[in-house]
Length: 144
View 1 (cartoon, one colour):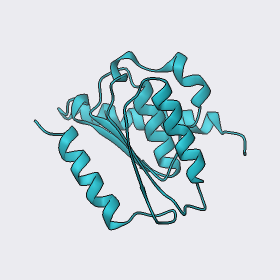
View 2 (cartoon, helix red, strand yellow):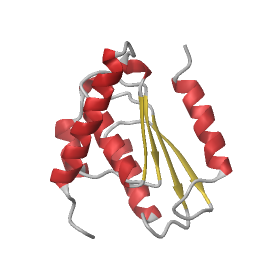
View 3 (cartoon, helix red, strand yellow):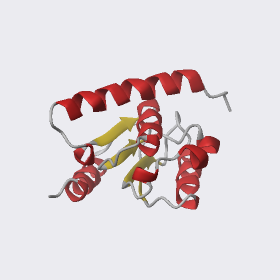
View 4 (cartoon, one colour):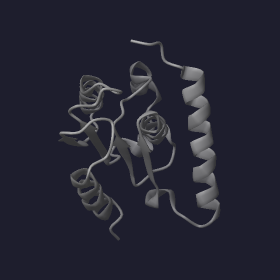
């Protein structure tokens, strides 16, 4: 129920965009870049990926949610409308409530995004089954 720190989130998104620019300058195509984050980092990664002007490989979001959700429809990048999105969340997460993550997934789906959703019986952490799910998803989105 806390108010969002929009200025802080947008500053973090600008920093991630600088990191993407560095990778592009090293010869990495944006379509080979996956933005990933855990908890608040997932919020940053997801918002950045959905608004980034060039096609990315995907967004991998763990134990997180979609901030600035009410602004997404107007600000979404056309280049990433078909962005592969992986979301995973613990059913016992006491930091980011599972209901918040599920509402974020519903918002994305309602806006037309395809979200691969995984939940595991864990708290605000990562488990071996989730790591296996991540490996499969990354293999698929980064396959040449």
